[in-house]
Structure formats: C-alpha cells, structure tokens
Amino acid sequence: MLSKWMLTDLGLPPFFFACARFAVVSLLMSPFLFPLPKKFGFLCMAALCVGALHLALLYTGLKTAPASSGSIVGQTLIPFATILSVIFLKEHIGLKRGLGILGALVGVIVLIYQPGDFALDVGLIYVMMAFLMLAIGSVLIKGVGEVSPWQYLAWMGVLAVIVLGVASALFETDQIALAKKANWKMGVGIFYTAILASLFAHGQYFRLLKTYDVTLIVPLTMMTPFWGVILGVLMRGEPFGTQFIVGAVLISVSVYVIARRGKIATEVVYE
Image 1 (cartoon, rainbow, N blue to C red):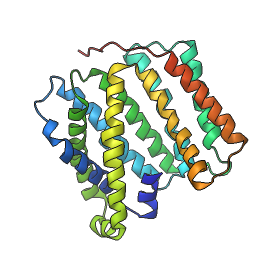
Image 2: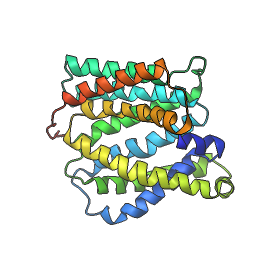
Image 3: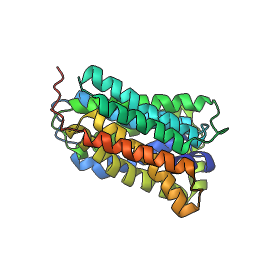
Image 4: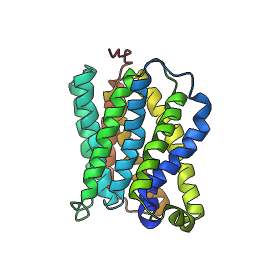
C-alpha cells in the first residue's frame, strides 16, 4: 500500500524510486560484498529476480493497477513457486499441504475481493510478471550455496542500482523534480522499503528459503493481506463483516496446515 501511494499519489517514477530504495540497501550492506562466493552466478541471478526485476515490474504495474486487484494477482506467486519447486527442486507437496495452499488462496480472494473494483488493467500483467520473477528467484536461492543473508542483500542492492538506474535514465524524466516535490514523504517511503522491507523482510525470506522447502515458505506470504486487512479494521475503522471473518478463518487454518506439514529442506546442488 505504501508503494502504491508513493507511485500514484506522489507520482514518483517507478524505476527511480526502486533505484533510490536499493541505493540505501547497497550502501548499508557494502561491507559484506566480498569475498565473492563460489556460486556467484547463481547469487546474481537470484538477486536480480527478487530485487531489480521483481520491483521494476511491480512498481510499473502499481502505477495503474487497482490496489485490491494487484493484491489478488500477487497471489500468483504461490502457484508459480509451487510449480517451479516441484519441477526443479523435486519438492513433494502432499495432499494436506496442497489443500492448505488452495484454502489459503481462496481465503485471500474472499478477504480482499471488492465487487466492481477488479478491472482489467495492463498494470495487472506487470504485477503478474513481477511475481513470476519473485518465484524464479525464490527457487534460485536454493542453489546459491554458502552465502549469508547480508551478502545476498549487498549484491541485490548493487545489481538493482545498476539495472534500475540505467532503466530510469533511459525511460523516465523529471526524476529529481518529482523527488523534490515529494519532499520528506519520499524519505519515509525509502526508509520503510529499504530498511523494513528489503533488509529485514527480504533478509529473513532468504534465510528461511535456505532452510525450508519453497512450498512451505512462499505460501506463508499470504498472511500479508491478512494482517493488512486486520490493521485496516483496527486503525482505520474499516468494516468488520462476514467477508472478513470467512476470509480470515480460511487463511488462518490453511496457513496452520501448511506450516505444520513443513520440514527442513536439504541443500540443493546445481551442476
């Protein structure tokens, strides 16, 4: 929601905003860049997919896609990651975890669907492609070898600054003027997305994917809209009705089933 506000209400160019976010990440994580890991190529591919490519497509899509529609389309991460992990990592889902994933997907749709708000928009295609990149990156993370979350974040930041900086220079205009107009609000957005989203959330996401199955960790991201709606009810007085209760119960029970069926994954070796 914050990114949607930064991109639409403040009018910040998507590549420029994402580049600024990762400039902070790369600066803070620069001490962890070296020595290079053995599987540096896999690290770069994973970092590019989860970082630059994911956010470039996501921010571009959010410029026009309705927020609720984008949240629903964003759940395509689950089937994308599940299919890729079964094919390339040979992970076994099982009936209970499969039903849990399906139940959580239904719960998210029930929770955030607003009739009449789901309009066909080209931005939704970008959002879907963004989560395909995130799914590919999530699978690639299993093959990066002995890499710390800090080194992963450091190279994610550096690669993203290069790719997004070039993209912004080629395809966007008036970046500095729009940043000055946004004033302190841009600083708040960069702080949240760089420190809390990238350093904390992405760092933990990397660590968990290195330890557990992709088909266990990725479905747990469906708790994000769950907490988003709860905070909307508590802090903004948004309606608390049957739709909320049904969706919340489906997500809670399904995520419990998914987590309960989880097991520690073995290290994947890529030749």
